[in-house]
Image (cartoon, rainbow, N blue to C red; front, side, top):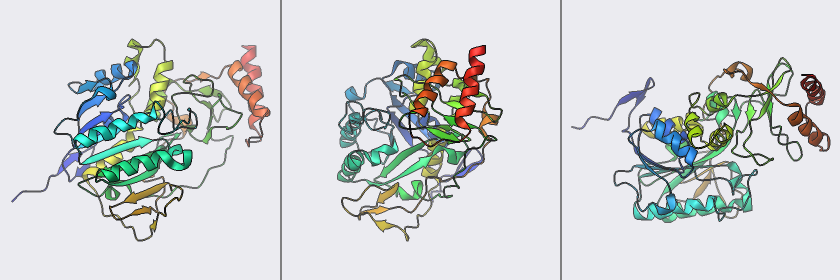
Length: 396
């Protein structure tokens, strides 16, 4: 009699066998690192960015690496899981918002081209939550429609990286589809509920994007706002942080890597293709949070029954909710939050391991000018603190 597969990884019992994974649009390997931590095996990767390729070659020895998804003819025969954090530039609020037919985000079509040839048992797709709203969710409609046509059951959920103890307010859509199992038993079974919103305070670190200030403040309490591959000024930039001491700084790139769940200096190999750290900020901002992928990888090997008793049908032409599923018998709204876990983490100012830089007077002045010309809500002490920071920076 065959015995059930049992393995231990990071102190946890994993009942199911590891999956052989192929990562498209792999970036610097956020999904794949997380899956590896849960014991899965990375078989092949595809990435076109030169800096990303340098990083992948450093960390994934012996793994087949392809450069262009458009010329990839087929998936390996042994592939069990296809992961694709496809480009979000045409879907994000910070991007061009061209939609699913845009030149970048439209590349997800190659996922379905490859699935036509080989319907792998599992598919994991990641992207920005704005895809639920842009053009009334047309991008997501196209994606789940294609999966349904190919015979997949699916579930998706908006997940916040803060749920895993990381000081970064980062929400992303994770969509899991399968022809073998129930995606709900992986993606929807854990739910700790979103904690109460914390108000800004001088005693708590306050992260904000100094490149914004006109249409949005881009702020977070005891966290940085979403690390991103671009900015309102057109270049990848670190956010700013008001420390409890009153100092206004920008974090070191190594701490940004850690905020995404990577080891410090994970992307340093990208310097071989791009001088300086600007491109590293882009790679880190476009990456998938490792800890989220690890949680999904763990649940893939240790699924639990999903209780759908409180879920409601998703009516045609309704807005896409923040979590939903289709088990082959219709679409439903999932009654879950964006916090599958609630891992305790250190306060942001204690999380920072490397010495940050003071925000320049020029950057702070530009932000303050935009902020004053706007009607954005901000803490009543915020402008005064910026003024004092600018004055001190100019005296240096």
